Image (cartoon, rainbow over all chains, first blue to last red; front, side, top):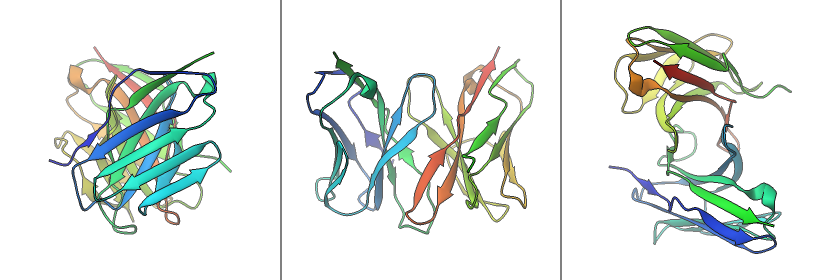
Length: 114
Length: 112
């Protein structure tokens, strides 16, 4: 069974610190990887996507992918209280253009304390 | 530019009833996927529509059905509602390049 695993948390970090969120996946055929942020009572919001091994940076966010280890992570630098939310890791097992059925992990709840 | 829209926002039904949820994708997006998110869990894929046909389906029973219209909008129908169908139903529309999905605000369904 294809699975995406995340620590449910909560992960508590002080304001200004680096938050590190991790995700492992079981399907070696997975091709694209996504991080969504979900505030309580709201829908998921796409914050990062990554297709290739290595790091991808966008502002305070860095996504890291290691396909050999089947591991993807999200780093949030200079964490702010407004970053407090649930972070969902999602995996698309197919190549781009061949369908986009996302498999989600259960999410990690992040709490940034002032 | 309007994002993904969904209606209604909230819905309360009783067991055994039928429900229809609606979704309009972002302008320029032609593929719509539906997800179910139970409280405290990640979204689960129900099915995807492209060119008015169901292209992929997740592990959901036939009680869940859908439709896509020529203007790319979509409906999700659930028959014979069960208490366990209570969840947030999310519609996502697909951008081809880069290949990403954007979610609408969701419909909160409560089955009593």
